[in-house]
Length: 487
Image 1 (cartoon, helix red, strand yellow):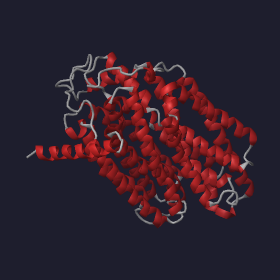
Image 2: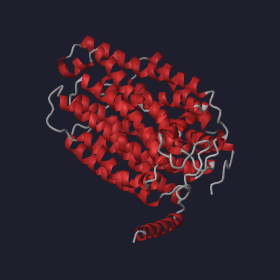
Image 3: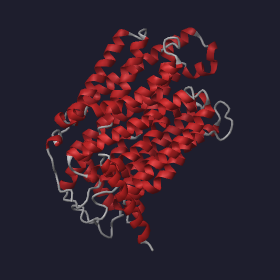
Image 4: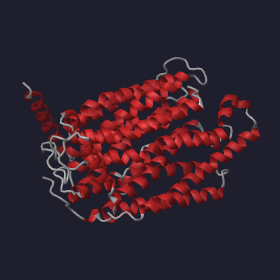
C-alpha cells in the first residue's frame, strides 16, 4: 500500500517530462525553477513592502522595530546551519530528501508569507502588539523560507556537477525569477503602491496560493543524484550511529569554515546581502522623498520598482554566453566596479538631477540582484571541492549553504536597523508624525542625508567587496566539463 502513491507520482512525472521534452524544455531544470518562481512571487513582495508597511501604516515604534530585527537577526542566522545539518544528516525522508522538504514545506511557507499583511487589531502609533506582530511575521517567514530554499539550493549542487548543466539551471531559474519578480510591478499598480490596502491584501493571498502551487510542482517532480544513495562516509567523519551527534556537526562545520574560498565568499556575500536589503527596504522611501511627484508620478514609480526586480533576470539571461566564456568570477567582479563607479558619478552630479537619480537607483538594484543571482555557482564549486577534498560519498550541500547563511543573513537585519537609526537621528520619525506640517529646513537636512546614503553606501560597500572577492581562487570552473561522476 505504501508504494502505490510513489509509483503514481513517478508515472505522472514521466508523463510530464515527456510533454516538457516535446516542447524543448529540460524537465529537471523546469522542476527546479518552479520553486524559484514560487519563492520569487512571495519574496519580492515581502522584502519590498514589509518595512514600509510596519513603519508607515502600522506605525511601529523605533524601539520595537529594532527589537524585532535583533530577534530576527539571531533566528535568521541560527536556523540556516541547523536546518542544513538536519537536511544533510536526518534519517526522516521529509528532511533528508530535497524534494520532500520542498513538498511539505511549501504550504507552511505560503501561510507564513501572509502573516505580515493582516494586522492583529487596529494599531495605535507605537503599539506594542505591532512589534510582536513584526517579530512573529519575520521569524515564521524566514524559518519556512530557509527550510524550503535550503533544499532547493542543495538541489542546485546535486542535480549535476557539470558547469554547463548548472548554467542551464541558472538560465531556467532566471526565467522563473523574471516571472516572479513581476509580482512587485503588478502589486504596485493594482494597489497603487499600497494605498489601496484591501487590494494589496487580496493580491498577497492570490500570490501565496500561486507560490505554493509552484513549489509543490518541485516537490512532486524534482530529484537529486543522491536521493537513492546512503549517507556513506563523510571523509574523516564517522557517519553511522553518531549521525546527529554534536561532534559530527562540529567537525563538518570546522571543515567548511577552514575553506579559504568559503571564507572569502562569505565576506563578499555578507556585503551583497546588506546591499540587497538596503535597496529592497528603502528604495520606495528614498524615491518618495528625493524625487518630486510631478517628476515621477505614481505609475512611473510603480514601473521603476518593477524594473528593479524584473531587469536583473533579463540581464542574467542576456549574459549566458559571457558566463560560459568568462565565468562568474570576472562578471561578479565587474559589477562591483560598476556599482562603485556609478555611485561616485551620482555623488558628483548631486540630487537635483531627478531622472538620473531614478535611473541610478533602478540600475543599482538591477546590478546587485543580478550579481546575487549568480552566487549559487561559486557555492556549488565550493561544495564540489569540499566533496573531493574529504572524499565524501555525497555532498554536504545544505550545510554549506546553511553555514554561509549563518554569517550573511544578519545583514538582512543590520541594513534596516542601521539606516532607520540614521534617518531617525535626522528627524525621519518626527517627519512621519508631523506630515505636511514638517519644518522645511529639517526636511531638507533629512533629504541630504538620504542622498548621501544612496551614494556613499554602494560606493563603500562595493569597494570592500572588490577587496574580498579578488583573492577567490576558483575562477575557471566554466572551462571544466566534468569534475566528478554524475552517476
